[in-house]
Amino acid sequence: MARLIKRILYCAAVLVIITLIKEGYFLWLDYYNTQHPDVVQCVAMGYVEELPLEGILLWDEQVVYAPRGGVLTYPSPLPRRVAKGDMVAAIDGSAVRIGASGYFFPALDGEEGDWVYPRIWPGTNQFPALKKAELLENGAYMAKGDAIGKLAYQPQELRCIAYLDKTPALFSDIKHGFIDIRMRERDKIWRATVRAYSDMALKIKVYLTLPFFPPSFMRSRAFSCSVLTGNRQGVSIPGTAVVVRDAKMGVLLLDGRVTKFTEIDGFQADGDSFFVVKGLSPGSVVVRYANKVKEGAVILW
Image (cartoon, rainbow, N blue to C red; front, top):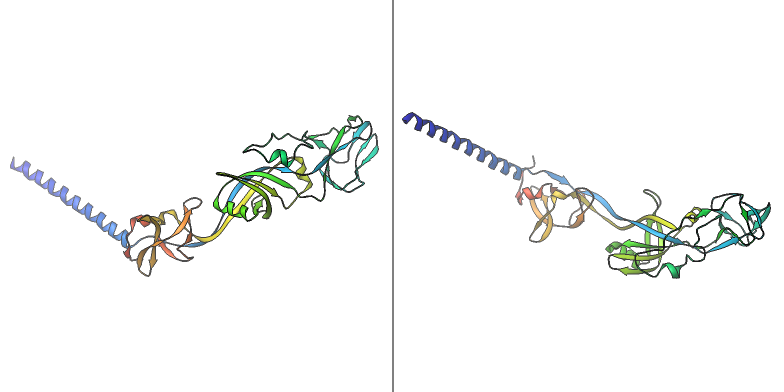
């Protein structure tokens, strides 16, 4: 019996010693991590909001009609620039010429003459259904007065109506009369003029003048691009470096061998990074995992 009690006491003593060693190790590790925090340097960064634009195009156009009956032929199925007096098609081999310069396209979508601003602008969040422009058959018989294509006068400004997600930066640009757009990534950035806009709470309806009008745009009345806004300069840090204390957002900034809570202003950017617009400078050093470290002296090496 006495031997059993000794064994129990021995095991209990060993368990207590192991527990104390374990607790002591974790206390030491916590202290070590507190005094030797992982730090990161703030990296200079520019941030731009990129928003999608899906809209419709408007231009002034005139339907071109066959002056006589016969077989239609045309030199190109593509929208192309033509000058006053140029031949745009032929009826039974006899040239059909136009009386003004512009872009000629031997295709129709049925909206010619009706796709105009007074019809498109009113209303909310919906455009009339887009119809595909159908290319006229080269070699088909046309009666006198049949439509053989359309002409968009040149020069003229290409216009666009679109609904955009409302952000403070974008709304500020629109109120100043412009938005910056880009057709594809790394393409040139163009500035479109805002002719009119309507604030619709979460959306903004805009009527734009685009800074370009290539002939190829006549293939479709639909238009898409990216809107770039909110160009700001600041620094990038890991999101784990940001903590909230007393309802204030900040970081633990390293000043010599001491960390101190420093208030910042910014927002979560792409991935795990945080974009800081106020409170930090490029090259500043902050604690990477701020929620694991207290303010005070640290040992970095």
